[in-house]
Length: 309
Length: 77
Image (cartoon, rainbow over all chains, first blue to last red; front, side, top):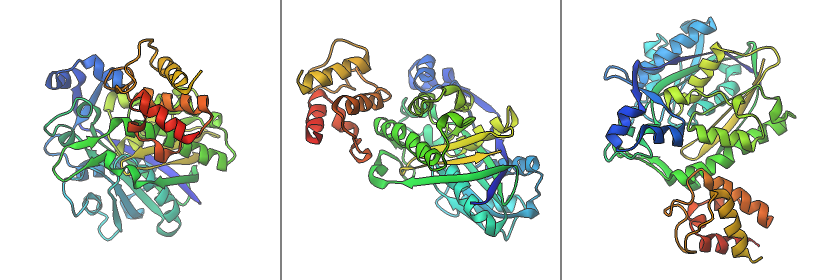
């Protein structure tokens, strides 16, 4: 695998929704939401903001920060589990919005783990297609707020988009990745057409608590790197308690797991790229840093990706 | 110590509570365990009984009650 990460970008809607606002609708305590999730607030898209428009905004920021213009992009991969219609997906719309008509634009309808799968695929394809934009955009709020609202689901999710540019060369080298899927528990986290999100939280947490550390360990061992050598883990921001458990399973300080879930909630597949975009800006990678991305989501799909500066 | 006592010890440790529900009562519905305590309990069961529980067996229903846990663990021994 010869590929590199050139940069990240993100877009978050301006409307901030606090736990207090949701607690009143869910007949629960704002503090309870924080305790069970680590989330204090999240962003909700306005009526004018779509999966495609948020994705395009994140992509524009990513390109600007990467010093690459739209004409230099050879492929777009767009992950979303919350696109507003069955087809076409947002990829072609985003490509059009960015002035990239004619560039292959592929949808990855994978919630939560889609951005990780996109980064891994882009790393394999960049030798053929050059610069590849990986975008993840999620408009989860209309789904989370569908009636009957559940207090175990509704407060978890927020809206937003993230983007990453993968190229054939660049300062941050993609070393390796592992991807896994297993449909045995597909019914435990699902979103039917126009139906509420259904989640067997116990099963999801049980599986994620095992599979994320397992994938990270598989990847690190394969590359002869101890978990303690990783500078930062940039993981799908599903739940603070889950991230803490993954850190414990890998026997690393939880502080090495970058977290912004307190501010944005779980933005599904966008969350890992939004977290990476934040971390890349401050403190950002330094020479010798080892960076481990990891995600888990409905399917189940999960994996990890290792990069270094 | 029999297997049930060993399981009860793990549930007490993970839940940090001494009072336990009836053997057939749900550990979750009784409020003894939450979703995040479940992975900890599975890990402790593996350590205590020296078994590796495959991911394919990680259905919360198998660990719903003391009786169910005992039944599953003894099937793996």
